[in-house]
Structure formats: structure tokens, C-alpha cells
Length: 126
Image (spheres, helix red, strand yellow):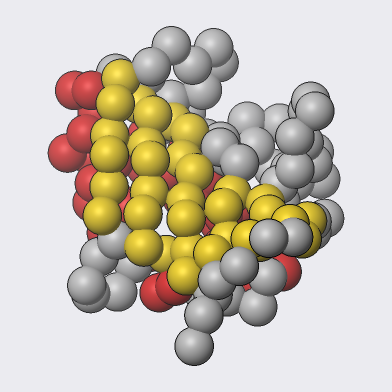
């Protein structure tokens, strides 16, 4: 099955050997995105709410470049630098996704300089 690269200047450019996203068949897979502004490449916000908002805006931009919306997301993986931030993160996260919400895995991770990273899988079929 062929892979189609998805790239937009409205989300942070890859900082290494990876793509922002790939479409494979009926699914779009994003790289892990953090709270980095696409043009300044600076971390946006100091709170989990601000960083979650920027991270999800980055993902939204990538999905839009693929012709999708947040409602197409079926799976998210969330990395939090501190799991005690979960309740505050969850409030911001919930505003980005209509019901039914995507399935989600949330784990604690070492994230130098940021509080959150998220990647998603979105359904792009009929």
C-alpha cells in the first residue's frame, strides 16, 4: 500500500528524519506534536492548558492539510511530563473532539522542555 506524505507550514516542521503525517490507505498517522509554534519554533505557553491547546492546534493544521477534521480522529496517544496534570489536560483536550471521543492512551514520559506530546490516527475513508 503506498504512503502519501502530508506536510503543512501551519504545523511545526519535522526536527529530524520523520514526516509530519502519512496517509496509508484510509488512515492518516501523525508524528508526535508538541506545543511548538509553527513559525517561531518556540514553545507556546507555560501551563498544561496552553500547551495542550497549541499541540492540538498543530494536529488540527496537519489534519486540515489532509482534508480532515478533528472528528476524523479515532485514536490518540498522549505523553504527559507529569500525570498529575491529567485532569487539567483533559478539560482542554475534550473541547477539541466532538462525541464520540477518540480512543486514547495516556502515559507519563520524559519530555525535555515541554509538558505534552500527542500523536493521532485519523480515518480518511468514506
